[in-house]
Image (cartoon, rainbow, N blue to C red; front, side, top):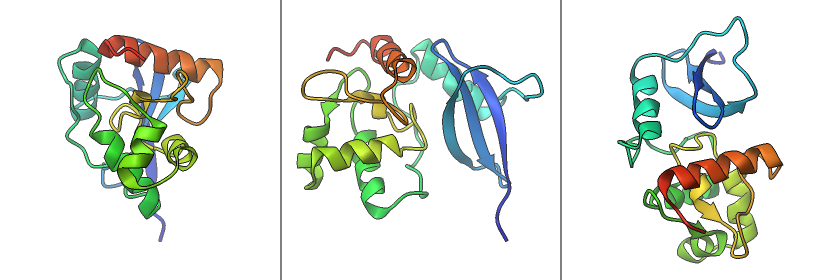
Length: 156
């Protein structure tokens, strides 16, 4: 029997975020959304408070494990990303060297991260610039990545 899922929406300074939970109220994913649908319920409680703290600048480190919904390699990459301090960046190559992999494979795992911001894949950059972000490198995604890095005071 497949577990059900439900979503709530959060309006962040940089984008609307759809926050997905399983039927046990466990966090599954954060996804970027263009707008809050008219029928949507807004996020409240612990996760709203946590995201508010991050966006206000008072929360620097999330106390949440990486997603179990990934391959062993993806989880290894996500664990390494979770160790990048607030306001700092690491390159795909840095992460690859740390875990004994290749930068392209690290980039692909970053793109599959279901918990952006919480597992801060925005802190992973290319050796020659910004790199991609959250499910692609389109301008809207890159604008969110730039905003998050600027919010944290990171330089790249």
